[in-house]
Length: 160
Image (cartoon, rainbow, N blue to C red; front, side, top):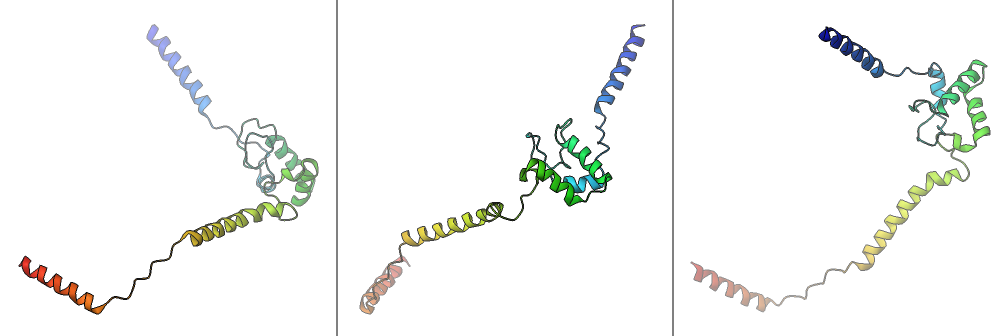
């Protein structure tokens, strides 16, 4: 009797565990068209740095409604750019996943390269300033060289 009850409990536990392990279903609003527009918009939930299309947080308070809004706008016949412009109008430029290459935002694209260039120039100038040139050797005297060669030959002869 107890073994039958134990088997029933194990089966129920297995079914419950399998139900919990099932993959979460995707929202019906994440169609290829919604994904195409959502990739250009940043998720502004504050907890991630993803786009509206790639935010994987369950119950995200921004990405879910944004996908739904994009789907409705696409169904109404709005173009991709018109939808993006609407989000930018409401949220500002922070709604974009990638800032535009104009105005002050251009500085954000250019400054890393300028900083790297300034750093490399600083390193070059530092090395150039503190690098000591090799000391030029004085011209050697042939007689002195011959004397040393003779001494070396004598020492080598003693080794044999």
